[in-house]
Image 1 (cartoon, one colour):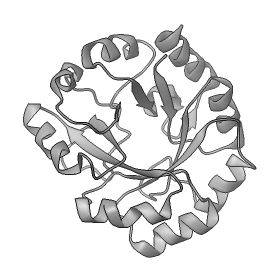
Image 2 (cartoon, helix red, strand yellow; image 1 turned 90 degrees about the vertical axis):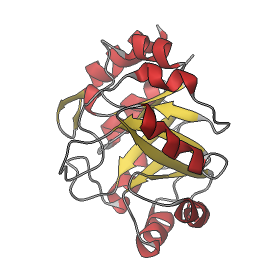
Image 3 (cartoon, helix red, strand yellow; image 1 turned 135 degrees about the vertical axis):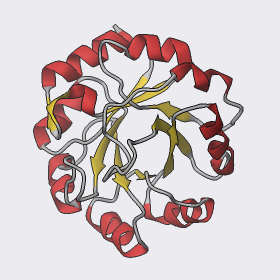
Length: 211
């Protein structure tokens, strides 16, 4: 079984669908430029009192300590995901705001981009490899862009990692085979429009991945 992170959830229905489909993680994006943005208090409401064995992930972009503290006090997420230009020192500083640890996103377009992951190996608790955003983009992820997933097959890191970037029901199985990923992250590939999740697409994704 390949673990799934359904990301960019905004409603209690999204959360219930994700949990029903066996998600290991449910992700909430706290970044206003994103069409998937949700305030921490609204994320806490969507999550409710907790859902089975799924774990919560608060996705942030270059967040300052005040925002991280607000997220911690409001949602108390299992994981903080840093999806901006954060340094290894900022990854370490973010750990107290999460119950389990920190996920650091690394943008990928070609093999040279993988070098950036080494700086976070053993520093972040997990690394997420996402497609590099378009030039001048207003947000670092959620564009549905793909890349050569096979680049990840030669990774030489010890930190557990997730595959992300343009995944959907049509390509996820091949992407996992090409990359060797044991966990995946999906957002735009399970939507009818940016920020609007589809229960049917989520189900198709889970079935395509794990049968």
